[in-house]
Length: 163
Image (cartoon, rainbow, N blue to C red; front, side):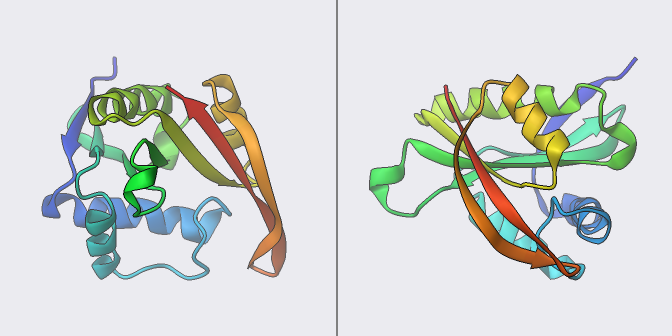
């Protein structure tokens, strides 16, 4: 049985979070950088999530992923909208952890007065698009062929959910 828990992101999560993110950089199109990021990149994550729900996801005390909300736009007129990000370790995908993380972030979003959650997803990441569709997100836009990684051009699909 899996015991899923959440810890607010802190410095102690730096290595695990960046290692998970770098796995997706190297092995998928779901993380956009072309090359792995240095552990100092974690500081940007902490800065971008300041004042928003941001968690390390633990399964039986092992870090199995991370999730967070961040500002869609820094202007106060967008305070009711946030971007969602989550990455689950490969060995833990398909076990319901993403849905649990989404619910946790939605609770935090509601407490903060957020009414719209946006996700931007690589068009090649069909599993993520399907996940978001199953969980109440609707496609609301698509930027055609704006990203090129490993000599492959693809779209960024925007999805939104009203909570």
